[in-house]
Length: 386
Image 1 (cartoon, one colour):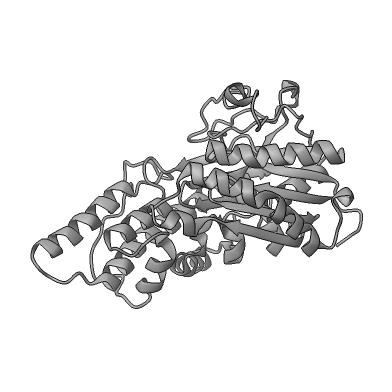
Image 2 (cartoon, rainbow, N blue to C red):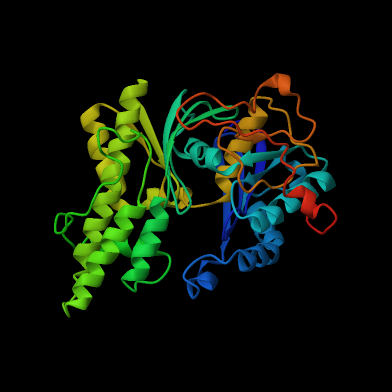
């Protein structure tokens, strides 16, 4: 760690966790998280209004905790990065507002960054600089995506994505059917270790010869599992919860890893990075390692704590923006709940289009997304959050 490497604080509030991280270059100095997941558990999912209020209450204490953990003062920072999208609009606005306030008060550059690109960049904190290009499989409660990133700060290309339920969402829904509570991923992972993954032949979505090679669909799998459970209960039979968990989980990770390895081969990329909350799943990690080793592909997966939403990943991408002299965002930055991954960086309202950082790339699902990042700002610019 060199003293001249950029020192950046990152703020993440896209969903139900208030994350604040401090990074110097590619070295993690602090990772503070305040989660409201227990508050949402009784509702069986995240309630946006509750999440926003929790972020408001946790923001300043979490920033102070991160600075103390890093052993620095706020004035020492070289920049402040914040997730500006995608995510829950209200939750994002809390983080963006806080980042703008700190950047203005401290006279530091502000970097609005993409949540998904941050999930890729966090791997630098554990395994060193990202290869270029990087192939990434991102799997979470809201996203299942295959991405090719020649430059994580300016060029991220979607190869495929979920067309319905994301993998993490399917885990939560099946856990609900099995009365296992929320969130569903950790408990299904735990029970699956004691079950037989071959006990029930659940379907593998979008794996036919005419299906989109890199897209994902877990809605049909979710329905199949739910109907199988309902049939057992209707017949008065006991549901083998561990076998159901193992067979369902195997169907999900089989498809994820199979498509990710295929993308690496097709694109000539000799490594695969897996990120997002579902990347903490033990079976996904094991099967990915097995298939990557067999295909001669190097696997990079951050430790579980860096896979879930956190401020460290935002700080990591912010530090990379500073290191590569990317243009800071201006104080007109707002939240964009549907920010496409083709925009890893939001320079702000006065961005010069000639720089070319915001153009979509013709690859699979890279569709045109022309906007000025103001659709949330327009309805909120006269209130507390702007």
